[in-house]
Amino acid sequence: MGGNGSKAVQQSSASREQAASVADLMSSRQGHPGCRHVQAVSKQRFRELVRRKFLGEVNGAIPRSAQTAPEVTSKSPASVIANAGAPSTGKDELVRTQTILHCQACASQGDGFSDEAKKHVRDLVTASRFGAICNLEHWMCMECGFMACLSPYDKKQHLLAHYHKTKHPLWIQCHDSHVFCVTCQLYVYPRELSGSSRYERILDDVVYQWLLTLGRVRLWWRVMDESLPKQLKENAGRGGDLLVRGIENFGNTCFFTSTCQALNHCKAFRERLAKSDDDGRPIQRELARLLSTYWDPSSKKRNINPRPFFRAVAENALFGRYSDHTMEDANSLIVDILNGMDPQLVNSTFGVRLQSRITCKRCEEAEKQRAKAADGETNSSPKEKGGAPRPLPMETVLSLGLTEQSYEGADVKKNIGKEETEGVLDKLDQKTRRIVELMTIHTRAQHASSVDVSDLVERYFQKEHIPDYRCSGCKLKGECFKEVNPTRLPKVLILQLKRFAPISLGVQIKSHRKVNVTETLNLKPFHLASDEKVAESYAYKLSSMVVHDGGMGGGHNMCYVRLPPSEGGDKWMWFSDRHIGPVPKAEVEAAEPYILFYTMEEKADTDSGQ
Image (cartoon, rainbow, N blue to C red; front, side, top):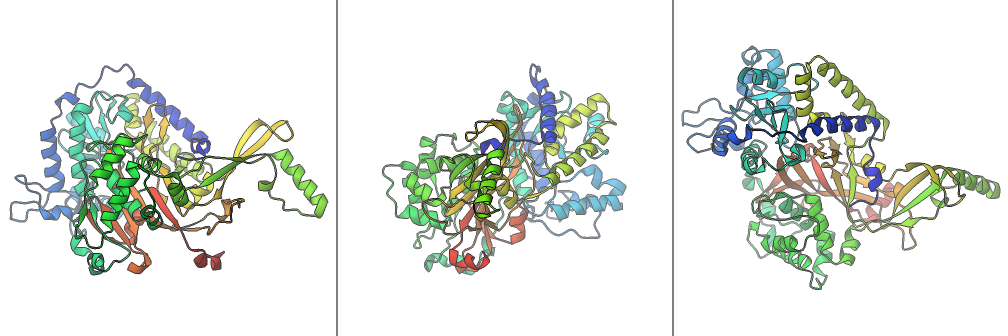
């Protein structure tokens, strides 16, 4: 949900050109006879391949070391550092020396001892701290497991070299889990890229095996119980502000468990919910019961079963379709949950009241001149002039676009990246260029520059240019600006980053653009005082966030929660289904945020800074 949807779909000229080129490329899937190679894929064989290669599985057993990521030693060659299965411990098991995904050809240059090979792998090691994106250019051959790179910016193209040598057709992208047939020049998974569900019957289970392996490599399910601080383990007995429990996953419901944790640790919402009557609303009733069970200081349960709440959401949802083995969107879930609750309760916590105003440039200038002539004032605010304001529906989630670019720095960097791409692609023959363009749309769809959350919020509220619009004041057509501002601020601000927005008709790619999560937000520059009351505070502090690691083909949702002041403050807890544990701030900063929860700070704490 977002009150400023028209701005959220705008694109720069560079982005429009890219979307058009992707549409042209993907239009070829229409009328394609299909890929015959998918039928030969064996789930069991693929499962054995990836578990042996990446997890060191021997005789069906995975060594405990497969859950760890030891430091790289300077004495080891790059090929050994990067490999998943070496050396032997003498106990009939393989111990992994580093948890990274890499191109085997790059790591094997000079038998792994060349400076280039070592630098390549060590750069990956540096980049692959938990949650970071470091392998968008890496693919795995689904026939033999060979890992290779493919990039529109690099002339090495080791994936193509392996294909020409072996003719193995099917490849899976390591991070986003897209499946592409090089022989057929066609995406076969997921449907957002293939344009069809014809291959899902076979590939759903196959890709799921990859995701289970990727989750172990990316440490989605770390065993951290032993690292829990003693005061957190004992908190249930002393009624502290924070209880830490896991939430059961029913199959593919990580989007549900992570969202529950974020709402659960939203104190302002939790307190209001406990005092409210559900009035026969099943979603509200079951959520209140779930939170009551979670925060019961007499309970010794380490994990909570959310089945009644999950069932209530599935039976009453307006947007999502929820079942144990169906991956859904965490944002759709939040909307469905809040829509199933008392509107007054929801709006008192999360509601953002917005209003829009269209300002004619001529009328604005005329107002300034009249004000100046009347009392000498030269700083008349456009917010007080122009057309009459129009109230907008109350919003509970503000959706911030990532694909559009409306400030100069990002456009410049984007154009530089485009020139670098053309320089590599121009040297390829037509067929090879087509393959590279298709297989790297997830890479080329990304932005070269990172962006701060505060900048995205500012862009959400910035003026939108409307050319050739008839002003309601002077009745003339001309240059106008539409502006959206909040007139009422929420106790808890929910921001969704639009990572899964379509980039063209029928083509949807997850955006991995790096977003720097601002710890504090100040909404004073955008707020218009309403007739109700001035905002209690304009300052917000990040309290929790839901992250998504993976891509369109599949991934995993997790939640990070900032500990309350009574538990030390500025310390973070990680929640991944039944797995929980304290994590450093650096891990939170490296993760890929999707939904952010900012809590309004007490005005007494912010007056001095205003």
